[in-house]
Every structure is written in structure tokens, then in C-alpha cells.
Length: 405
Image (tube, rainbow, N blue to C red; front, top):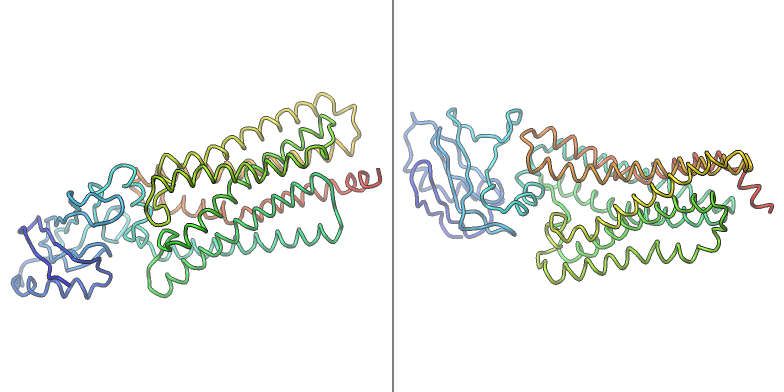
């Protein structure tokens, strides 16, 4: 390891490092010579420290230390990072209600890369260890409960030997939720285990090669969930139109699984050609992310259109239909509306979280949204099964009637 080189004085210090520091002891050893020279006991200094990207030297109170930006994905090494030392000899924080020190890397990144860094940098992810750990535990609990609820529901449906177009839609929808929850649960467990072991939090971007496979599976499951939710809404539309749903089962299978495959193939082609970073680092903040987002948005829009027509048609012609049939369609429509609301909340919260991370001056706002998105995505499977049971309990008589025809 090379020795740190101080090329500036007092407030502007440039430290050239040969590798990324991980432990405070490494930084202290780099500045042994500097500590011996600065032996003025009356002066107030901020102590040597590390933010896990750069070592920061002993800095006089009331000054700002600067260094070339670290060699990271998206970072401009010709620009500088800054860290301020308060008058009382403590490293400055970003937020007024936060006691943790903050390194200003904003000049190191373009607007897109800066947003990626704010989410994924170790410095930000370590801002509140207790909150991040609790968020991981919440995610694990929600995903575990979702998987148990889905497996129980599928076992019950199989035991009762329920069949029909709507049950096929639910089976496919539950299959995508199981796939999504399984991948997310794996990541949450890995995240929590690494945190408890090393005191560091990692994301999917820290797991190369295998990470790409998991990301593809996760994005596939996400899109498929939205598509099958839209097909659930379309099925209510067919029922109110008194069209035989059995005639569209093959079409549903093609759309439900084909659209996500085509979307992922297009997105993978773009990522392979344009993103050479491990695990396609920062892909969520690139323009190509709209390849993944647009099918979800359109699925929600189509669902609302079909359900709006279903509700209108029931109000206009419900008096001419069988009471049990109308009751079943209404319950199914309400369940689908609840699914759409839940998915829309998840999508909107993600967008708000990204925007707030870029502009927020209050860490608590970020943590509140992190908890919200963790809750919405982790408990998704549980919420969908609750919607199914609401419809199933109310529509049981209709099931029996259909099975006798």
C-alpha cells in the first residue's frame, strides 16, 4: 500500500490512495507521519476517519478537507469530494437531526449517477444501522408471511378441486408472486446476514454474476404480476359481457407469460449493449428502465378501463342478471380494484422515493418511504391472498352453481 500524499494545506487536502479503505486502522496508519507533525495540543481537530471510500485526514476545526473523487462507477475522478469539520472538532452531518458524519460527493456525479450513488453508497446505507436492520426484518417477515399465505391458498384450492378460468388466472398470479417473493426474500436474508456479521449493508449490486440472474428473475416476476392483474380485470369484463372465458385461456397464457418475456428480451439487449457495470449497476435510474416500467403502467391503465366498464355495465344491466352472478362479479371487481390500488401505490412510492432521495434535506423522509416501499412490496402476496379469500368466501355459492351446469 502506498503512503498517503498531502498535496494541499489546511482546508484543502488531496489524499491519493491506492485502494479503497475499509477499516479505520488503515486510515490511521496512512496518516502516522502527519499526526506527528501536527502536535499542537491547543488546536482543535477532527480525527482521522473513513467513509469506506476515502480516508480523511486530521482536519482543523472550521475547515473543509477535499480529495479527488473515488474511482467508482459513474464517478468523475477529475472533480473533488468534500468533508467539513465543525468548530467543535466534529465532522459535519448532512441533516440537522442526524449525528452521523457526511461526505459531500455531489460534484463527483452527474445527476443520474448522483442519484444512483445516494441510494447505493455505503456512506448513505450506513446512515442509520438500526433503521435499515428493522427494514430488512420487516421485509423478511412480510415476504415469509406472503409465501405461507400463498402456499396455504393454493393447497386449499387444490384440496377443494376448484377449476375454471378465474382459478387459472389466480394460479398464474400466485405463481408469479411466489417467484417474486422468493427472490426478494433471498436478498433480504443475505442483506441482514452480512449486516449482522460485518456491520455493513449490501445490495444486489454487490453480488456479481449471480446477481444478474436474480435481477432478471425479479424483473420478470414484477412485470408478470402486473400483466396477470390486468388479465384478472379483463376477465371481469368478459363475464359482464357474458362471453365464454374458456375461449381466451390460451390467449391469457400467451399474454401473461409472453409479454414479460418479450419485454425482458428487449431490455436485456439494451443492457448488454450499453451497460457494462456489474449487475447492470444503476439500471433503475437509466432511460432504458422505461422498457420495464411501461408494461406495468399500461397494465394498470387497461385494468382500470376494463373495470370501469364492468362497474358501469353492472349498474345498467344488473337488474336483468342472476343475483348470485352479479354478486360474484362485483366481489371479483372489488378485489381487482384493491390489487390495482396496491400495485399503483408501490409504483408511485418508488418514483417518489427516487425524487426525494435527490432533493430531500431530511433523512427521516427517506426512511419513511423506505419503510413504506418495503411494506408494500413485502406484503404484496399476503394482500393478494386476502383479496382472493374475500372474493372466494362471497362467491362460493356461485362456484357451486357453475360446477353443476
